[in-house]
Amino acid sequence: MELLTGTTLDQANAIVARYPEGRERSAVMPLLYLVQSIEGMVSRQGLREVAELLGLTTAEVEAVATFYSMYRLRPTGEHLVNVCTNLSCMLRGANHVYRAAVEAAEIPPGQEVSPDGAVSVHEEECLGVCEFAPAVQVDFAGHDRVTPERARALIARLRAGEVPEPSRGPRVDGFRHASRILAGLEQVDA
Amino acid sequence: MSATFEPRLTRNWDDPEVVSLEGYEAKQGYAGLRAALAMSDAEIVETVKASGLRGRGGAGFPTGMKWGFVPRDTGKPTYVVVNFDESEPGTCNNRQLVEREPHRLLEGAVISALAIGCETAFIYVRGEYLWQGTILQRAVDEAYAGGHLGSDVLGSGKRVDVVLHRGAGAYICGEETALLNSLEGFRGQPRLRPPFPAVEGLYASPTVINNPETLMNVPDILAFGGDWFRSVGPEKSPGTKMFTVSGKVERPGNYEVPMGTPFRVLLEDLAGGVLDGRALKAWTPGGSSTPMLTAEHIDVALDYESIAAAGSLLGTGAVMVMDETDCVVEAAERMVRFYAHESCGKCTPCREGTWWATRVLERIEAGHGRDDDLPLMTEMGRNIMFKAFCALADGAASVINSSLKHFADEYEAHVREGRCPMGAAHGALGVAV
Image (cartoon, rainbow over the protein chains, first blue to last red):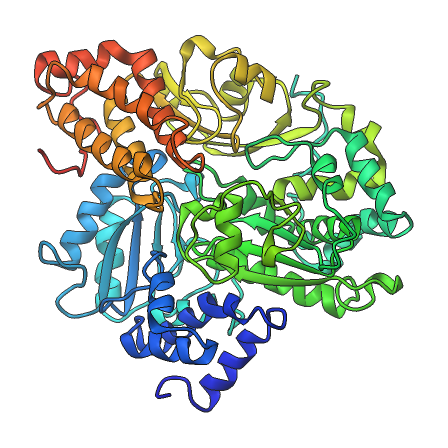
């Protein structure tokens, strides 16, 4: 075990203990968030260690990790920018917001991460904030009614090392921090 | 109609303190749980049955009846699972209900646990709802500290634990058997039914799965009784319903109205009408998987029966509004692409059908439609509808079928003119064929 040692191993065991005895496999999803919070993505090593902890094969854990879009199995920016382009947001101009975000991040065609490694930009399905369309999440913190201009400004600030204040909810300091919160290991307040 | 009714689920929304246990109890929170603790489990089930409460997640199944199906003599534990994986496009009313009053959800979940003799309830929280998950966790921590959860719920000697489980970005996990697989640590793919979850659900044990809005109606039903609940809304769909109104309206948002409220009231009085005074073109009553309706249906009553009679479904109460300048083909392409992305891949008609239908819609919208594309779409809709394991594929087919039914002339114009006659108002990202 390289990732799950000392404190992180204790955290992993606490995650497993949330579920009933004999049902440890239920912990696979929060454990994937835990290893993702350590490396900024889910690596082969992360898959192996989650498998070893739960007595599963690496393939079984990989099958789960690849099913869900919030686990990143490829290198990901320090910040993950999700732009909803589903219908409610599209009707309010989301396609232009997405295009502006990709351009501002200078992401080359076919790639996902800005050249400086600061941001990944993804076109997302409905994020469940339809009343504030077009909706953008930065590290799963919500930014409401985003225009192309605001999207460019958001990306510029992230690339300058700042964390913009979300429209609602708590500040999230990057994709790793978001993953730690999603693993249920940290409480944050708005 | 809406002028005289008293809000129920949203009545405390002007008080930001109700997010806390103290603030919630100051508004008579947990009175329903206290009432339930004075009843037998069978009496709780009977009270909810008498209220006529139906599941708000889309299917509209009677809640008390669902609880009554849970066998108690299997020797296995029973489980309550809250389906807070709200992901239907256009839907965010559960999100706001939980943001405002997380304890109302916990209270409803504990009452349902008492009704079926469950000691461990799970709340499956949509992964993207990072903040709402932390609000719920804070509420769970408060409820344990206050004795509302744990080994001795409010001194009753009964145990109810609540465990939060975060999803990770998969629409299909809103399908209840896929959710159970996800919660057990597997890929979120639906299970064959029967056995139904009431008999073999989580960990092959009897399980009740409810939507947050459904459970958040339960505390008041216990506190005020089934007759009180039935005093609003039609006979077969009593109570109020949360609607999310989004898209081309002046005031997008979440609104609570009595079941049976005419769509016109929701659109014009509450959401401020169509944006910039334009004409209504198309709308969905319950998210993208419910067949779209048109301006002709503006006086439809918003309840299960009336919407079904109009040819659609109440679904999640997610009203997405399109105006006269919006292109139905572009919208259909976007919605079907969603299903192609979210198909779990288990069934061929869904996995392949949604992918190919997206390709055909893309080319029609891009001006490369072929003369036989309309019959092709009709055939695809027929070959997808009811041909797969779960309802995800039916959602995609509903988009295809309803858009063809109401807007065939617009499809034909795309093919005939070799371009989008609406001028591709939203600048589709789709790659030209």
